[in-house]
Structures are given as structure tokens and as C-alpha cells.
Length: 286
Image (tube, rainbow, N blue to C red; front, side, top):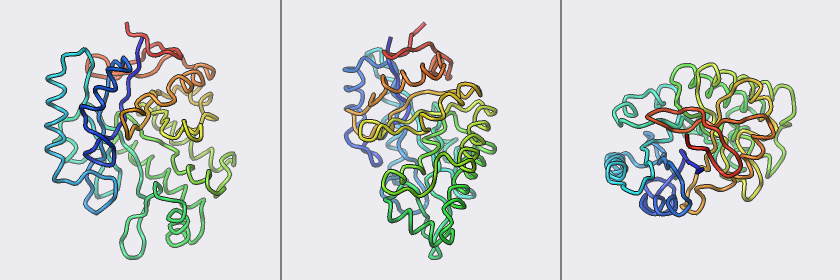
């Protein structure tokens, strides 16, 4: 039995340490698969996306580790790709030319300010409030709706293999309650996106990045039972930005998924994602 992680960031973007450091940590943790998914370049400055100049070096580095890893650990080459209509997405030529094993598709940027600066829902709380006020005239429901609409557009037009942190916009409710996560309008948005993911056979990651600090997962644990009942494919990813965080929250979240009815996680096997039995200790490799 062992775990795998398909969403992680090393020093080529906003992560810490080298790919080799992650591989050593994965070996120490007796992992089966590690996927590197640095933030793909975008054509404007950010504090976390990989500069375009580093992409060829990153791809060569991970490819070399794939080919020369003799320790039984499967190393996969990926990118976390932002979906920005008309700019970049999982179906972009840049991503196709990168010859990845799979793609994590995520929405971070939701429209732009009047000066053209892209508004990211992944910045601090004050920046979130600024975007809601200036772009959506203070209407947080409109901002949240737009965020989920963009995910739906990505899933429909350029579906990735894995949908990244699909309800991360709710992270700001930890700082200040911007909207009611139990409101019908919000739950309808979540379930619409999850339904499309299920229809397109996209794996929805249970993202545990903040679990150790806040016990928060993306999507919320409150949706796990609905997801199981509606045949949503899931895997557990930690969105690790440091080698020590590769399996953060995995055992606890696995227990929650089991309680919701899940018996299979989608894991890499033979060149594709397949359902594998699991328990709190890992995936059963058969």
C-alpha cells in the first residue's frame, strides 16, 4: 500500500527546494507516484507562475528524472495550467507542445481591474475584497458565480485530467465571512461544476494544502457524500510547496472519503488514471 501525489510545486515556480529533494522525500514516505506540476507560464507578471524562460529547463529536468529514476518511484511530468479565456488553458498549444503526462487545470484569475491587471482569487483577503468591489461592484455572489463559470468553461472546452482546488474561492471565508457556503445559490454552483467534471470524466482533486492549519479541503468535506452519490472521480493531492508536505492530511481525508462511501481513488497506472481501492493507509496496488 502506498500514496501518490499529482499536484506539487518545486523551485521552478513558487515551491521550495529542487525536484530531487521532492523525490528523496517521496522515497522516504514510500510513495508510489510523484507528479511535478509547477505553475505554467502566463503572459503577464505574477509572484507564483513559472517564467516562460524556465519552462524548457523544467521540462528537460523532470523528463530526465523520469527516465533515470531507478528506485521504483514513478515520476510524472505535469503543469498546473491556468484557464484564462483567449490567453491560456489546458488545450493551449504551449501545453500540448510540452508533452506532459497529464494536466492539472485550475482557475486563479477572474477578469481584470480597469488598468488591465488580472484579479486573482488566490491573493490575500484585502485583494479579494478589492476585486469584488471594483470589478463586480461589491456583488460577491456575482464574483463567485463568475469564478465557477470559468471552471465550467474550462471543463467543457479544454478539459484537463485533474481539476485543481475547485472551490478555493471559499478560502477567504476563513478570514472574514464573505458569503454563506450553505446558501442554495452557492451549493448549486459547486454541484454544477462537479456534475460537468463527472460528465467529462475529469478527476477532481481533494486538495489538502491547508488541512494541517485549518482542516480545510477543496472541495469542502461537506460535499463528499454528494460527490460519491453523483459518480465524481476523486484523488487526493496536497498541492505541496515543500517536500515535507507531500502527504499532508492524506490519511485523515481518506477516512472522510471512506465515510462518504468512496472505496476507490483515481491513480496513475499504465499511462492513465484508473480507479484503485484505498484505505486510510494508502492505495492498494494491484
